[in-house]
Length: 119
Length: 119
DNA sequence: TATACATATGAACAATAATTCATATGAAAA
DNA sequence: TTTTCATATGAATTATTGTTCATATGTATA
Image (cartoon, rainbow over all chains, first blue to last red; front, side):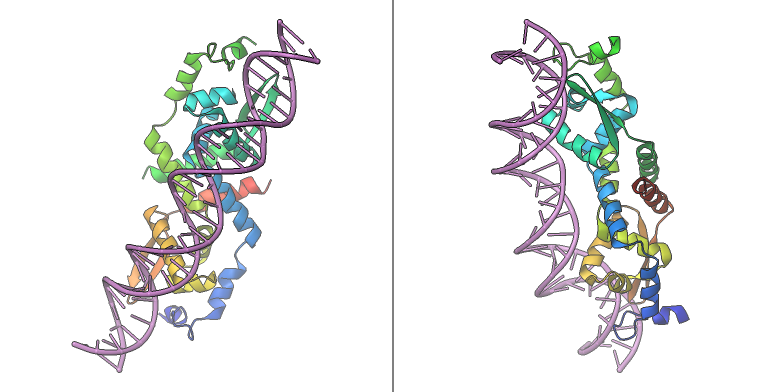
């Protein structure tokens, strides 16, 4: 209960040390921002579906669009975001551009998300 | 090269089997939607900061607001979203409501996100 | 070089979401 | 019971973002 006293919410009784302690252990603003930006990328069902498709196969833009029944433009826009986040990579083969997962973090992060949901 | 032929993007040459194979291994729409919704929750720096604060301490709403230099209302709105997603839990103690992390998935997911960023 | 095809991209529009403000709810104390 | 304090919430506003449409870029082929 002693601890609770200093956590009281009245402005004049708040224990600054507690607030400062928590703040001192926080990563810097930039990292928190980048982290949120990364998860924002996962936070769209179109992009999640693209990632899932790429779990199976390396595919070109048009195939992804067909698989997901969406326009080439919409997919291309989203692939750009996924690429900028380092989640997918691509290689050109003639006129086509093939996309694939950049690394295994994608699978791990999604797997963790699924675990959380399945409870 | 044989495989590439069937992946050609010309509408009349697309190999439907490939598209169907990928589709058959996709989780159902609902799960993909839920997954995106979950990551959307992580995809906001205010909520990420709240989660980080709760890594350290169980805290009441007002303390969180002070720690993050935000209004009580804004924090309360976000805590509601975090609670609905099952990421945080709360308990009432008199007039105050204390929030804490619901389970370890939060830490794991964020840890994976950080790993990805730090490359 | 001219044409066709695959992909990328800018601008506009529509939809979604975060914060603020005002106020309601809920609990303890006077 | 009335007041005070902590939290929750609805409505309005602002900001952000996904998709579409039109078009540009880049590559291969005729």
